[in-house]
Length: 354
Ligand code: AMP
Ligand code: MG
Image (cartoon, rainbow, N blue to C red; front, side, top):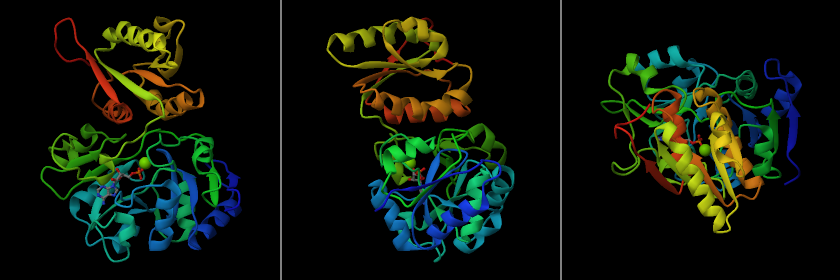
């Protein structure tokens, strides 16, 4: 395939001619990466099985890992699903456009390639002017997983997309860094209580007023309901050791582990809060942002994991300990999935933290 065509566009006022060119590629069955408010997506016409199959080949994504369908407004959901119940209706009007993917029973307009053979389809409406303009210009729903090679950290900049996808896709709309930095929340309303299959910026606390009780899928409890959750994810090439526990207890243990691996000849980086950088003098630090700003931490997380790879790091020792509520739940989910090993530091009163 020839080089990937890149259109630089303004986030809030994208050049219509560039968007039209990108949309034409989608309509012809090609692949275009585009920004959303979460991460960059790798888009194809969601109603065209062969186009969607190309996404899986470009990403080397397992065929049974379904992808999310992006629409530009709630009305566009109707032809894609069997029915929209009141709860889904309420969630769409409250959280769309936004980082919430909702599972529906699929209609025949959705080819099996999109859903990995499942009879449900995940749909969302992204809160990003470029994504919305692309969907409208294409005139079809756009199926899009994150625009990274399968297993790698999701791309939050156009440069990240090119690192993985240059020459593997026809086009890329570049509108600068994404906002949230972590993938959408995925919610399944088909069971009681409803289940969050993947935590994201829309938290269980945000959903509770609409869903009552809501459960967060637990990896240890039976076979995964969201096929994607069984695969390695978000991982840099380096081995990631996650150190979890109350934030104030982490630095001594993290520093000790960093020294330990360095002495063994590993190239070590410490993934840490900005306020702790001084605790790791002499070590390479990858700074996430202030511990009390989960929004900034979420935005930096994948970029810092990719930086570890670019710098040839072989072991990342990562600070955990983000409170498991709000965006913190999604941050801890991604850190845990990126990690090969978790060490929990306990001390003091022996109770939880955060
Ligand atoms: P990505 O596109 O990389 O953000 O990944 C999409 C995520 O949504 C994966 O974890 C999928 O397993 C999940 N997903 C998409 N469609 C469905 C579905 N129909 N049922 C369950 N999970 C889904
Ligand atoms: Mg992904």
